[in-house]
Length: 248
Image 1 (cartoon, rainbow, N blue to C red):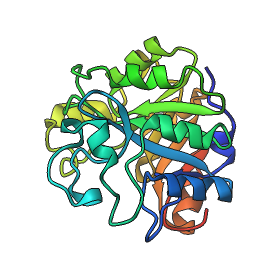
Image 2 (cartoon, one colour):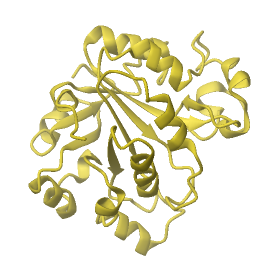
Image 3 (tube, rainbow, N blue to C red):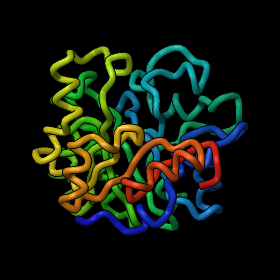
């Protein structure tokens, strides 16, 4: 399935159009993005029973001031928490799909559940696929884990899927050895993943593996742009941008 052209036509608000008092990955941030006419990027983590929750981190500390991990809490317990001291709860994917309702494109990142981008991915991608069965509107799903991308493709072949990627610096990926980080940075898993687009770290867009895929016609998105100057530089190579903290 080809990537919908609105993912390159419209700037993509990273975790919604969040701002002070309007937390990332909240329904309020998504409403703000819709009102501004932006596409939306969001993250998925599982609750204890596997419900797809819209949340970036593995732990609850930064966003909720709560100890523990999101995957250890039930969806009902997570619904009682609030994001960064606001009235905004942690939404489920189902709630976000009802809110967006196809009005703007939706870019969904399934967070790695293996811990090392390996094969132990669980069922989260299948739960996301099930949630999207009746959804109408531009939507695409991506992950850093190529095994997740491949498994999602089997579960929902009608939904566009992509690989999220970067240059895999050691300080950000200490769980991976040097050889594995270099292999991932060369995007060697892209063909086997069945990905149909790439979302790559914007400062590494001149990576030969990235430019080779782009030359083959692979749609290229990038993350995360934080100024007009960065946007101008990224758009020399990328077709679409994910942005935050300024008006794209």
